[in-house]
Length: 293
Image (cartoon, rainbow, N blue to C red; front, side, top):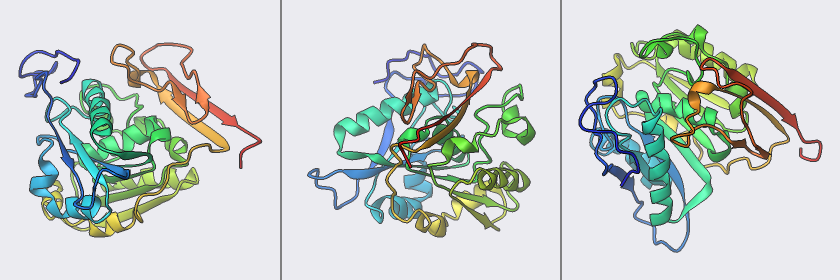
């Protein structure tokens, strides 16, 4: 049961949505789970125009390889509908589902992997870049690039304008990324993916890029062929707890105090806040601890 009451049937933009106070979500529990020991947690964020059942129905191989074979509990939130982009209420729902999953199952707090296709891939860029402390790895699948902080305006504009995005790759210096994108996919243009990959490399991040040849965006998902990408996760790494250097950027449009969204701490830095609440404000903090390697 969500604590938000968003009305009936349509979101603020008039798009079809599932705005019920009862928000469903999907959980996959490996057959070996007994409840006596904790398992890693893997998020499967759904694409636009589908729902939390996407991976069980369309991508059963991905579920088997990412969840059963890796011995990881997996969860897919609904996010109030088909096109929430994991912003605002959709992000709020993500955190509420995490709380419910952690109450119902034993999951390790420092072994959490994020993945998803298309819109889910977009969230797999944005959420770890905003909250790097809580993720141990991320695997965006045909999700474009991190446009969490962008000067582009208009619905969906940030998803198409790589030049307008703030480079937040230093945020995930301690979060390895396995990125996959098709040469011919129309909704996450490959040249933007290469430009984003260059940013990760320049930041000294741990990043792997898989370039696939399956034509067309929906077809790529329907092939359910991400075995090589899942294998590149090498299980589930332990999240970095106390890095010696923190380089972190964020922007005002990620902060919503009413919904409890936005960074308040990152690793061992607390009290993170912006000097200005202007809608286009972007902030950055760089900190080093000489006592940590």
